[in-house]
Amino acid sequence: MTNSVILALHLLSAVIWVGGMFFAYMALRPVAASQLEPPARLRLWAGVFSRFFPWVWIGIVLLLTTGYWMLFKLFGGMGGAPLYIHIMNGLGIIMILIYMHVFFAPFRRLKQAVAIEDWPTGGAKLAQIRVLVGINLSLGLIVVAIASGGRYLG
Image (cartoon, rainbow, N blue to C red; front, side, top):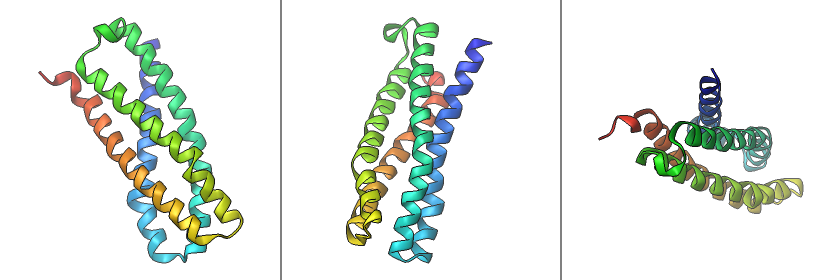
């Protein structure tokens, strides 16, 4: 039972993070760009990120906690883990580092720019976030593919 709960928490955390990025990048971003003027668009994104990023923090804590719990419980540690687990772990750490950069640098500056209505700076910070979220989304989709099929590879 415990393994099932741990795995479910791990998967739900990944789905919320990667799914949220997919929705934001592939659905919300194009509509916001085509229908909103820069001030409204920047306010929207500052608000969306302010609501989404706490969920990402929770997801990261759960992903790390459950992932390492499973790593040690099921494989006895890194030495007993198959290659696909190492790849997921490495890509996950890279994703976390990219997210932390987004959160502590361009997102913080985006919020500051929106607060003082500095639209050019806000636009530049949003563009930075867009690139980094695109990278993280790509990595997240790769991790999902590896997680779902990695154990079946040679």
